Image 1 (tube, rainbow, N blue to C red):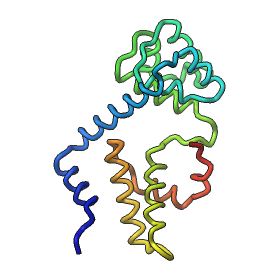
Image 2: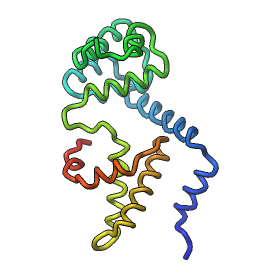
Image 3: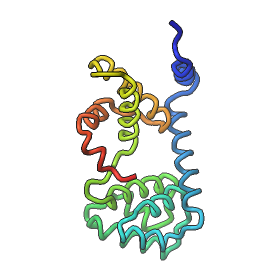
Image 4: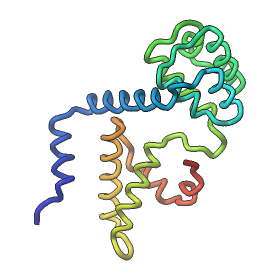
Length: 190
């Protein structure tokens, strides 16, 4: 029996491309998409929306590496200070908001804003949720009850595919745990 072509493509990609290159490609794609989404947005409007509960615009501005003016930096610092007391700030956060942030700082700032600004019950790790969704779809193709061995292989395959796309390693146990709690996945907002 011949293997499906998708398995051949994944094997070839793993052979030719290193995980560091995949991570770099995934990061570049996220920056590009964020830059497109935040094209005409300003930090002032994005921070205003974040105060209202929608941090996605602010995260897109930061991931898209929009230049931060002094007034924007002060607004961002006050937003973060409302969500996280200054004494709990990591040293890099105080440095990034005190001066001109570097490329690495923009990514860390976006992650921090996403973490402190999410609503209670919101999704922190979208990659794990996407891998769980993919595994769930693959398991739905099997009629009847899915054997544990097949379930394990499908979860690992979903983690590999989503991990390759995102450029990170996804822990199959986190996906398995998420699949065992389907109610938590249904409440996720898109």
